[in-house]
Image 1 (cartoon, rainbow, N blue to C red):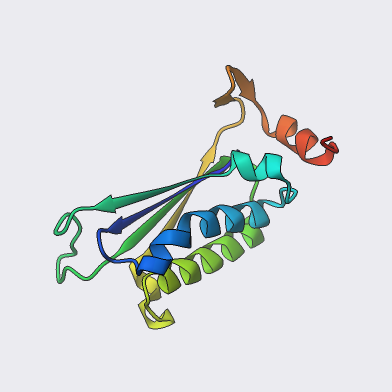
Image 2: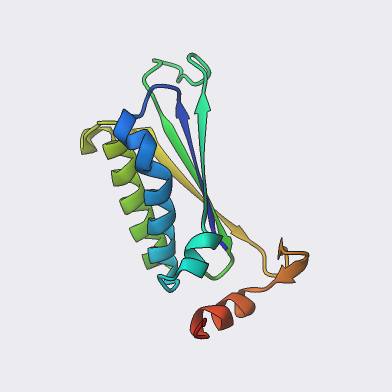
Length: 141
């Protein structure tokens, strides 16, 4: 039940990038979580695109577009290797969606938020990481 949110200045993404980035980011998050590639798990990977109005994001030196990606996963879902792979892939996807090169990689920040076990609720109930692991290993008909 991961979530991924991209915050970007309005107009910073290409038309093609804006059209595909949410699905691309959700798929990448599932890949690095090690979730099964099923319709059920794809439906649980929520992706948001927050576009800021012009001038709402600047640095102390310029107003070039910067991108923040917030990833929320259950604690324990990503080890260090998976986090590094996720950050690398997400950065590349955001840069591509904005028509930027790897030279601009420091414009993309990825913040991984690990939700403490027992604090993730959905469908009116609490889901623990062990519940999700069990779901992932159970064949769905």
